[in-house]
Amino acid sequence: MAERVIKKAKLIEGPVGKTIINLTIPMIFAMMSMVAFNLVDTFYVGKLGTNELAALSFTFPVILVVVSIALGLGMGTSAVISRAIGEGDHYKVQRLTTDGLLLALLVVLCFVIIGFLTIEPLFKILGATPIILPLIKKYMSIWYAGMPFVVVPMVGNNAIRATGDTKTPSAIMMVAVTVNFIMDPLLIFGIGPFPKLGIAGAAISTVIARFITFSVALWVLAIRDKMISFILPKFNRILQSWKSILFIGVPIAGARIITPLSIGVITSIIAGYGPKAVAGFGVASRIEFFALAVIRALSSVFGPFVGQNIGAKKYNRVEKGIIFSKRFAILWGAIMFIILVLSSRPIASIFNKDPDVISTIILYLSIVPIGYGLQGILLICNTSLNVLRKPLQAAGLIITQMFILYIPLAYLGSYLFGIKGIFSGIALAYLIAGIIAHFVLKKHLISIKKNME
Image: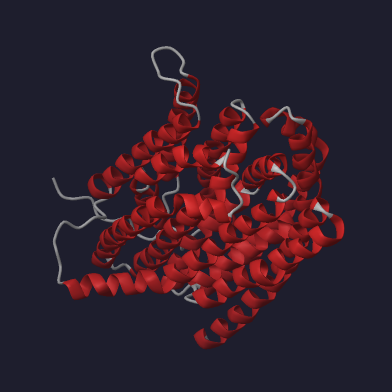
């Protein structure tokens, strides 16, 4: 039987809005699944107590650093693969996919070693107390051991999405969430024959679920879609692939790392208000990821759309897609703001019964969501700039948001108005950065259009 040929570019024809919506809908389920993955852990760990919930909140920015690196590599791989598909170069698609996965494995090895050696000093810097630190160690020692099952599937799933297939990665993530949902209470609370492992049980459940995504993603790429090459080329050819991936991936990863590092700084500021404030902020951050899941889904699938159309030299479709996506981001942000403001108390009560934790969650959800629409525009502009081979400009937007706006405004807000001022500073950072991103992308689109004429 002949090997299956790599899918041809299928995002370069048809109505732009409908194409983007069809790509986004499956990705919404994937994003919801990813957020639900974290919310399930938060929900069950919250039942153990405030200290356990605070410990999990401290791990959040560190885990986001690793995830950011994985997503940077994945998006860099997806960007070059989608353009290769648009160009019709099937050998190049296969080579880039294979080399991207190899690169991910090398990165994992480095970070596993670094992670194990820095657990205690790193979390002390973030403000973890002697009571909470042992709980963090239990969780992170297991999580670091399972890191390959987190990073490699992210690169693999992005490679699958580059073909225009967003359904398969979504299905993979939904299965993983289901497994995590089932295993969490069994291992955390010791139900039935399972041992009671507490917060360590949440980490083991995560590793088991991620192993499923690892196995299925590799099967899809290697067996179903024939996107992995088992022919070893000259090392120079692998280096060429790595250079093209890293040219886009490193700025993306760097920019994405800035976000959890900034959240880490904010966490350390909020730690001054006590563990209950940290627990509330951790829950609110996860709820925010859920609220922005649709916009994040749109920005994720927008990369393959832009890449295939640029590769096929269909600039007008790119321009129409950007306009459509920005309008949708504003609309969704407005909807989420209204929903979260009106329902913040019942949502907060789901995760913890402590009144101080609940009040922190309510305060966050009453202020920060006002900036969600423009935060969505920032995400879309970043994706567009990366695929248009302007990764430094995209990274510059994130640096501006976090270092010039997010952290300084949070510090200033804390000094002037306490924790309410911190959350107001975050909202203001989202608003200003979104406006800046709109004009930066607009400038580059005008320049690209002139060059293509």
